[in-house]
Image 1 (tube, rainbow, N blue to C red):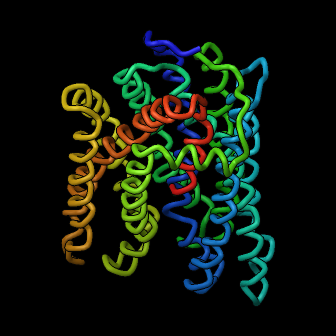
Image 2: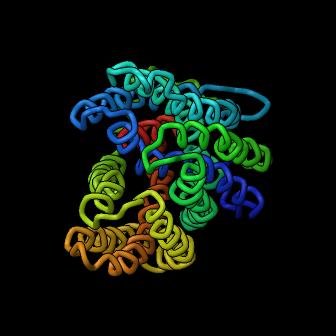
Length: 379
């Protein structure tokens, strides 16, 4: 049962602890998956992109299905937490298996690429089990407009630690076991060692959220019927389209930053250099959370979201105007990117529950899982 009372800080912290694991993987994937495929496995860039697209298409299918399933689940742990626990247990081992690279020494890159993509799909299925039901819990825990912003700020503020693990700690661990910057053995050993980093935060966070407010299971319709209800909500369509453009633009930068460091700035060890840049990014992101929470309560989430989008867009655009001999400016740019990224995280994810409320007023159904499933799909 939802209410307008404040959710305890302990539960909010647990919510963020879960995101430490998911952010670790998402950031690690954004920076290193394509780089690993092309530089370590020798997959031509065109085929690497196509294979990754196929793997993500599988994720597009599973997101709304898991959302539908969680909406109609009824257990002693509630609707969402059993899925999150299962995903947490699977996440670490799947990442380790993904980078095992058993076919890397063969002449052809085909088997290595297919193996990597197969376990990429399994890894993202584990991530879906965590992220889609987990995202639905914001709307379940409270109906209060500003409290949802505060919960989301805690979620992404604490979860920002995971961004540093994925973009900072992971590269250091990789380098300890690598003879070169693209040594498959380094990635293999690092991901085995990091199994607890990917799995334990989810398990711990799920335990910490055991007292979170919850709703009873719903008698929900088929996925395609839910989709009509979800996309029939105007506020969700607007949020979905806006966020899609924003994620697409930012992904262009994150997936290419290592290539920019290596081929534009001519850095000999782009993986290690990236650690410093990402530390700046994460620190400024975490520092910005109280500001964006305060701003949203003063001018509203929509205006705050617009401000953060404009700032983030301008900051990201600056990356492409920095000369090869002026890498020092990249430190400043990354600080601005991190600051505005805080608003990029807080506002859209706190606005989804508001769209859920709009949809419930129209249909009478509580479809938190469905809304988050489709939102995560486009992400």
